[in-house]
Length: 198
Image (tube, rainbow, N blue to C red; front, side, top):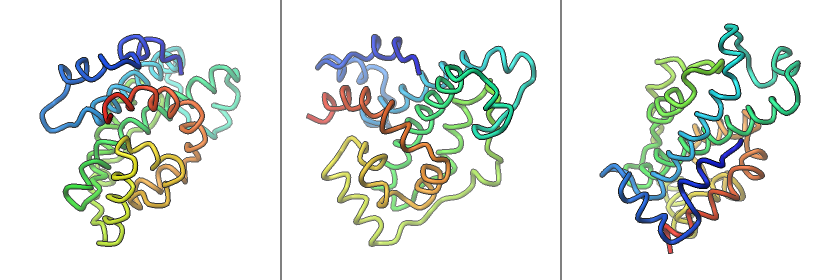
């Protein structure tokens, strides 16, 4: 993912907090705002990377034969941009689950569909988007414990993925996207988010 615009707009400096405070919706934290902006930039990059494919009415999945025929550089850009979208849209419902005791897959799918619109990626079906995962007391305690240790939520995409709500864990593990998030998404995110939780 070419995230130069994101890196310039959201610098890894103490001023980042003020920049995001001006963009933040009342129901969102600064951390969730940063994550959503990351997803928005990744979605833009995904649309740019797939523009010529979209113009030809081309559709694919990341493991399909048609995708694998694309140049390696294009495949990598699409994979990383898609991982940026998945990462960014996962944090707001994860943050809310600490308050509500539910992981709202409906919100996840809604945010995801918004960011992949205009790309060859398939939108999630409406009936899938109605899911709200109730968290057991033990699961909720584990999630809150991870957040106390790491209020950036980044560890849910690395060493603490086992504590993520089941719906999110299925998305992350079954898609095989975690290694891409760890390598390409977490480093620039972590450089910035540390200024929001200090």
